[in-house]
Amino acid sequence: MKVRFTETVLRDANQSLMATRLPYKDYEKILPEMDKAGYYSVECWGGATFDSCLRYLGEDPWERLRNIRKNMPNTRLQMLLRGQNLLGYKHYHDDVVEKFVELSIKNGIDIIRIFDALNDFRNIQTALEATKKYANERTVASGCISYTQSPVHTVEKYVEMCKELKKMGFDTICFKDMAGTMSPWEAENLVKGVKNAIGDMPLILHTHCTTGMAYMTVTKAIEAGVDVIDTATSCFSNGTSQPATETLFYALQQYGADTGLNEDVINKVNDFFKPVKQKYIDDGTLSPKSMGTDSQALVYKVPGGMLSNMIANLKDMNAMDKFDDALLEIPAVRKDLGYPPLVTPLSQMVGNQAVVNVLMGERYKQISNEIKNYFKGEYGHSPAPVSQELQDKILGQGGKPVDCRIEDSKRTGEDFQKAKEALGDLCRSEEDMMSYICYPDQARRFLEDRKAKEENVAVYSIVEA
Ligand code: CO
Image (cartoon, rainbow, N blue to C red; front, side, top):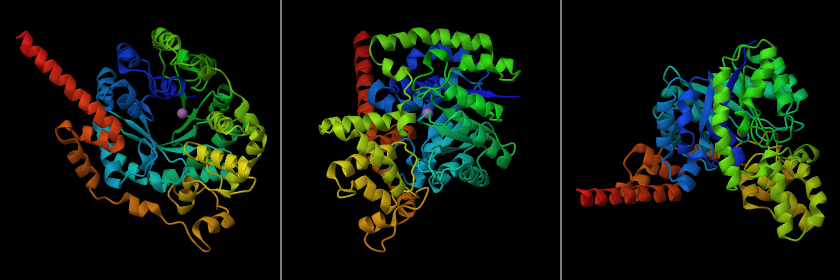
């Protein structure tokens, strides 16, 4: 049995436990050691890291990536990419998506894990093509499926999705259980079904410990033949993060599994991160709340984040007495929307609409703009057909959603032009330009600060001379 590990401490564990506030300097020293661990890959970029670098940490995300690359030359570096939305929720033009992928590979990324919140694979096509176009011998295009439960999300449906990803040309397939609601039983059936259908194409499981099931789920997935699991070094594991690297390594040893991991090294990695974690517990960045187990998501069948969002909304409106009704309303709204996976931003949209329906005492008396846009087709295809009645109400009798992809994806070159004009001499590279396209305000502020710092240094050196 061969099971490989993806270490997530630099990206998802950091994002899940401490809102992605881990600065590069805090872990730079351990990177050469991590490079010897024998991981399948290290997830270190993408997701919220990019935004957080610019917005909170005063770091150039591209420079961070190049530095990690320099210090870990032998390990495959991995990023998470939201298909046509890149690292956010907006639909970017194809030329922007392509350039982003090109630069990610150029700056050091080996594995690009690409997903779409609705599993509308048209939204990951361009990113895949770009990955293939700019691939070197280490590049891996990983097709990722957002996992959810609903009457239409059967094993058969997931098998169909996997076959489609294989046909599209992805090298590996990953199931992303962002809410940690995949049960051991589901994992076993899913992995068996999928492995049967896709043969020896590597299958990866990404889950979270949020609800407390992850160790059981991962174990069952391994028994059923999953090839790669995502884990976090133990002091950055559990809670809303991934299960622990060393713990699963230990358990798998007894199965006689070949993990490729070096036990000494993974223990050293954990020792290194312990004081880092303590520092952020002490300053309040790492909240004890994110380190516990929250089984509410299983009771209410909604992800933890969505639940706290709803409670906050109801409290704001002084309507906590409507909490139970709002919870009961969620499945109805989700059905009307064709069972979207409850991930950001869909989880908030469904939750808010359920609250509004209950507070108004009538369904869809008020409909949010986001839900209207969803019906117009701006987010892509829904997993199952939407409610015809609601569609007619939003789009007019006989109205149909448009394929927003076609217009929104056009290669115009205008984003690059606009970014260069807006930045002027602040823009020194294609990477600067791309940072601006993704996060205009944050990137501008970062680039202005960079320039100001350089000018200070220049003045200082003249005085010194
Ligand atoms: Co995750």
